Length: 325
Image (cartoon, rainbow, N blue to C red; front, top):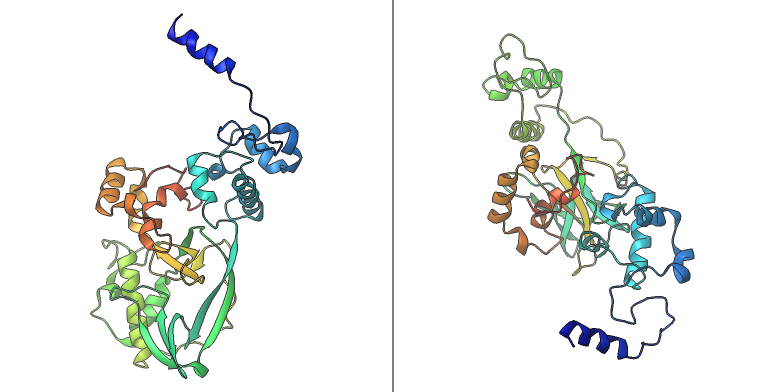
């Protein structure tokens, strides 16, 4: 008798394991899969469509960030943790996050700028700006009675795009006219997206570095009283799942800090790297330089920067790629 025949006989001679009747289909030690006859009535039409068409969750037919998309993720997670459905490794990575859930994100408003609370000491509060600068985040100490705490419900673990506000050419010309800062190089550069005049026609338009310098010039002029700050409008909650103005990075995401249980905003990415996302050499170099395989903490910018290609579709960078940079 051959070895194959012996194995077949051995398998057939083993008694059949009794079904646990739990609907998990895991009694034989197999990976959990959907048991049509027992739990099909639990599956929504949307999730059933993805299963029938063999569409993975990270390639959902729903608009990323829509309520339908969040419902799909929440439903899939509830069935997956019970062992009723089996998912790919890519989808498992999504279901292990808080995507589809929301949390309250708290910031402090002081003199028109947003800060995170670092610590409190009696009537004093130590604040750190939510925006990065070239010299780090600004930290200040103020009295608690002088601050306003804002709360907004935000989606968790869903990277979004920072919509950067570019000044118009008219605003730039007016600024340099008022401040009489004629020697600054920005005074001779056409604003991004604007046509240059005879003087500026041969000069490359603004980039992100120029925008950062522009914001620094405006802040300095306001501090020196050279320009008056317009009356501030009442702050509104940020739109859920939509781009938000401000920030020095290209993207941001809200995450729940496992230590403090509070919601944290993580800014990451550089707009200058967007064009290189389809370049294998650039991705490999980035992944090696930043040790992407070791980035496991979702509260850090490095985690999200390394996984940027995996969220390419929702960030408007093309189709998703299951790879690090």
